[in-house]
Image (cartoon, rainbow, N blue to C red):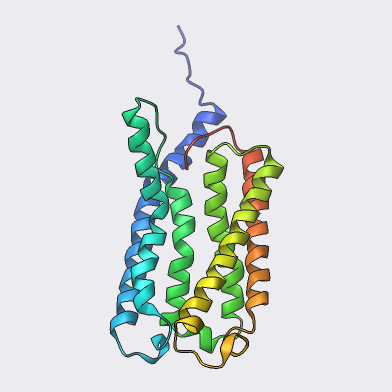
Length: 223
Protein backbone atom coordinates (compact mmCIF):
# COMPACT_ATOMS: atom_id res chain seq x y z
CA UNK A 1 0.00 0.00 0.00
CA UNK A 2 1.48 3.31 -1.03
CA UNK A 3 2.16 5.88 1.66
CA UNK A 4 0.28 9.14 1.03
CA UNK A 5 2.58 11.98 0.11
CA UNK A 6 1.99 15.25 1.95
CA UNK A 7 1.82 18.19 -0.40
CA UNK A 8 2.76 21.62 0.92
CA UNK A 9 0.38 24.24 -0.36
CA UNK A 10 1.43 27.65 -1.59
CA UNK A 11 -0.02 29.41 1.45
CA UNK A 12 1.83 27.12 3.85
CA UNK A 13 5.14 27.48 2.03
CA UNK A 14 4.76 31.25 2.03
CA UNK A 15 4.41 31.36 5.82
CA UNK A 16 7.95 30.10 6.45
CA UNK A 17 9.77 33.22 5.18
CA UNK A 18 7.17 35.38 6.91
CA UNK A 19 7.81 33.56 10.18
CA UNK A 20 11.55 34.03 9.90
CA UNK A 21 11.01 37.71 9.10
CA UNK A 22 8.77 38.12 12.14
CA UNK A 23 11.43 36.60 14.40
CA UNK A 24 14.31 38.88 13.43
CA UNK A 25 12.44 42.18 13.09
CA UNK A 26 12.24 42.89 16.88
CA UNK A 27 16.00 42.33 17.12
CA UNK A 28 16.53 44.69 14.20
CA UNK A 29 14.44 47.31 16.00
CA UNK A 30 16.57 46.88 19.12
CA UNK A 31 19.78 47.23 17.10
CA UNK A 32 18.52 50.37 15.38
CA UNK A 33 17.45 51.87 18.70
CA UNK A 34 20.74 51.16 20.50
CA UNK A 35 22.87 52.40 17.60
CA UNK A 36 20.86 55.61 17.45
CA UNK A 37 20.96 56.25 21.20
CA UNK A 38 24.72 55.71 21.41
CA UNK A 39 25.30 58.25 18.63
CA UNK A 40 22.86 60.69 20.23
CA UNK A 41 24.71 60.45 23.54
CA UNK A 42 28.05 61.07 21.83
CA UNK A 43 26.60 64.09 20.07
CA UNK A 44 24.97 65.48 23.21
CA UNK A 45 27.95 65.12 25.55
CA UNK A 46 30.95 65.62 23.27
CA UNK A 47 32.54 68.68 21.72
CA UNK A 48 32.89 67.20 18.24
CA UNK A 49 32.34 69.91 15.62
CA UNK A 50 29.81 68.00 13.48
CA UNK A 51 27.33 68.04 16.38
CA UNK A 52 27.69 71.71 17.31
CA UNK A 53 24.46 73.70 17.27
CA UNK A 54 22.33 70.77 16.09
CA UNK A 55 20.23 70.23 19.20
CA UNK A 56 21.51 66.79 20.10
CA UNK A 57 20.44 67.22 23.72
CA UNK A 58 16.84 67.66 22.59
CA UNK A 59 17.21 64.81 20.10
CA UNK A 60 18.52 62.50 22.82
CA UNK A 61 15.33 63.14 24.79
CA UNK A 62 12.90 62.98 21.85
CA UNK A 63 14.20 60.46 19.34
CA UNK A 64 14.04 57.28 21.49
CA UNK A 65 10.47 58.10 22.50
CA UNK A 66 9.42 58.71 18.89
CA UNK A 67 11.17 55.53 17.73
CA UNK A 68 9.27 53.43 20.29
CA UNK A 69 5.95 55.26 20.08
CA UNK A 70 4.34 52.65 17.83
CA UNK A 71 4.98 49.58 20.07
CA UNK A 72 4.21 51.58 23.22
CA UNK A 73 0.78 52.55 21.88
CA UNK A 74 0.26 48.97 20.68
CA UNK A 75 1.07 47.58 24.14
CA UNK A 76 -1.45 49.94 25.77
CA UNK A 77 -4.13 48.97 23.24
CA UNK A 78 -3.36 45.28 23.72
CA UNK A 79 -3.72 45.64 27.51
CA UNK A 80 -7.10 47.29 27.07
CA UNK A 81 -8.29 44.61 24.66
CA UNK A 82 -7.12 41.85 27.01
CA UNK A 83 -8.96 43.55 29.87
CA UNK A 84 -12.13 43.35 27.77
CA UNK A 85 -11.28 39.70 26.91
CA UNK A 86 -10.87 40.57 23.25
CA UNK A 87 -8.29 39.03 20.95
CA UNK A 88 -5.14 40.93 20.04
CA UNK A 89 -2.71 40.47 17.20
CA UNK A 90 1.09 40.60 17.26
CA UNK A 91 2.95 43.81 17.99
CA UNK A 92 3.57 45.87 14.81
CA UNK A 93 7.32 45.30 14.63
CA UNK A 94 7.60 45.81 10.86
CA UNK A 95 5.93 49.22 11.13
CA UNK A 96 8.13 50.03 14.14
CA UNK A 97 11.27 49.23 12.14
CA UNK A 98 10.21 51.47 9.27
CA UNK A 99 9.41 54.31 11.68
CA UNK A 100 12.70 53.92 13.58
CA UNK A 101 15.07 53.70 10.61
CA UNK A 102 14.84 57.38 9.57
CA UNK A 103 16.05 58.47 13.01
CA UNK A 104 19.09 56.22 12.68
CA UNK A 105 19.81 57.55 9.19
CA UNK A 106 19.51 61.16 10.37
CA UNK A 107 21.78 60.69 13.38
CA UNK A 108 24.35 58.66 11.43
CA UNK A 109 24.45 61.36 8.76
CA UNK A 110 25.35 63.88 11.44
CA UNK A 111 27.92 61.58 13.03
CA UNK A 112 29.71 61.12 9.69
CA UNK A 113 29.25 64.83 8.85
CA UNK A 114 27.44 63.87 5.64
CA UNK A 115 25.09 66.86 5.77
CA UNK A 116 28.05 69.17 5.21
CA UNK A 117 30.31 66.86 3.20
CA UNK A 118 27.75 65.50 0.68
CA UNK A 119 25.72 68.16 -1.09
CA UNK A 120 22.76 65.89 -1.91
CA UNK A 121 22.57 64.09 1.45
CA UNK A 122 19.89 66.32 3.00
CA UNK A 123 17.62 66.04 -0.05
CA UNK A 124 18.08 62.26 -0.19
CA UNK A 125 17.19 62.05 3.50
CA UNK A 126 13.94 63.92 3.06
CA UNK A 127 12.91 61.65 0.19
CA UNK A 128 14.02 58.26 1.53
CA UNK A 129 13.34 58.83 5.22
CA UNK A 130 9.80 60.01 4.54
CA UNK A 131 9.19 57.02 2.31
CA UNK A 132 10.26 54.76 5.21
CA UNK A 133 8.32 56.68 7.85
CA UNK A 134 5.19 56.85 5.70
CA UNK A 135 5.56 53.16 4.89
CA UNK A 136 5.40 52.39 8.60
CA UNK A 137 2.30 54.57 8.92
CA UNK A 138 0.81 52.80 5.91
CA UNK A 139 1.27 49.38 7.53
CA UNK A 140 -0.54 50.63 10.62
CA UNK A 141 -3.37 52.04 8.51
CA UNK A 142 -3.59 48.78 6.58
CA UNK A 143 -3.79 46.74 9.77
CA UNK A 144 -6.37 49.18 11.08
CA UNK A 145 -8.63 48.16 8.21
CA UNK A 146 -8.34 51.17 5.88
CA UNK A 147 -9.86 50.14 2.55
CA UNK A 148 -10.10 50.22 -0.45
CA UNK A 149 -6.56 50.34 -1.76
CA UNK A 150 -6.84 53.84 -3.20
CA UNK A 151 -7.97 55.11 0.22
CA UNK A 152 -5.03 53.33 1.85
CA UNK A 153 -2.62 54.99 -0.59
CA UNK A 154 -4.11 58.45 -0.06
CA UNK A 155 -4.22 58.12 3.73
CA UNK A 156 -0.61 56.92 3.82
CA UNK A 157 0.54 59.84 1.67
CA UNK A 158 -1.54 62.27 3.72
CA UNK A 159 -0.13 61.13 7.04
CA UNK A 160 3.39 61.35 5.61
CA UNK A 161 2.77 64.87 4.33
CA UNK A 162 1.48 66.00 7.74
CA UNK A 163 4.54 64.50 9.42
CA UNK A 164 6.79 66.33 6.94
CA UNK A 165 5.14 69.63 7.85
CA UNK A 166 5.48 68.84 11.54
CA UNK A 167 9.17 68.02 11.11
CA UNK A 168 9.87 71.34 9.39
CA UNK A 169 8.07 73.18 12.19
CA UNK A 170 10.20 71.29 14.70
CA UNK A 171 13.37 72.31 12.86
CA UNK A 172 12.23 75.91 12.85
CA UNK A 173 11.55 75.84 16.59
CA UNK A 174 14.79 74.03 17.43
CA UNK A 175 17.22 75.92 15.26
CA UNK A 176 15.62 79.34 14.74
CA UNK A 177 12.91 80.29 17.22
CA UNK A 178 14.65 78.83 20.27
CA UNK A 179 18.04 77.93 18.79
CA UNK A 180 21.32 79.60 18.04
CA UNK A 181 20.98 80.16 14.30
CA UNK A 182 21.08 83.81 13.28
CA UNK A 183 19.83 85.40 10.09
CA UNK A 184 16.18 84.35 10.21
CA UNK A 185 14.24 81.66 8.45
CA UNK A 186 15.42 82.47 4.93
CA UNK A 187 19.10 82.25 5.84
CA UNK A 188 18.83 79.08 7.94
CA UNK A 189 16.25 77.02 6.01
CA UNK A 190 15.75 78.57 2.60
CA UNK A 191 15.16 75.08 1.20
CA UNK A 192 12.15 74.35 3.42
CA UNK A 193 9.74 74.14 0.47
CA UNK A 194 12.11 71.78 -1.31
CA UNK A 195 12.32 69.61 1.80
CA UNK A 196 8.54 69.53 2.06
CA UNK A 197 8.20 68.61 -1.61
CA UNK A 198 10.67 65.74 -1.26
CA UNK A 199 9.02 64.54 1.94
CA UNK A 200 5.59 64.55 0.29
CA UNK A 201 7.01 62.72 -2.72
CA UNK A 202 8.47 60.04 -0.47
CA UNK A 203 5.12 59.76 1.31
CA UNK A 204 3.34 59.36 -2.02
CA UNK A 205 5.73 56.62 -3.10
CA UNK A 206 5.13 54.83 0.20
CA UNK A 207 1.38 55.07 -0.29
CA UNK A 208 1.59 53.44 -3.72
CA UNK A 209 3.92 50.68 -2.49
CA UNK A 210 1.77 49.82 0.54
CA UNK A 211 -1.39 49.74 -1.57
CA UNK A 212 0.21 47.52 -4.22
CA UNK A 213 1.54 45.12 -1.60
CA UNK A 214 -1.90 44.98 -0.07
CA UNK A 215 -3.30 43.92 -3.44
CA UNK A 216 -0.72 41.16 -3.75
CA UNK A 217 -1.06 39.86 -0.18
CA UNK A 218 -3.69 37.69 1.47
CA UNK A 219 -5.85 39.23 4.21
CA UNK A 220 -3.86 39.78 7.42
CA UNK A 221 -3.90 41.55 10.72
CA UNK A 222 -0.85 42.90 12.51
CA UNK A 223 2.60 43.72 11.17
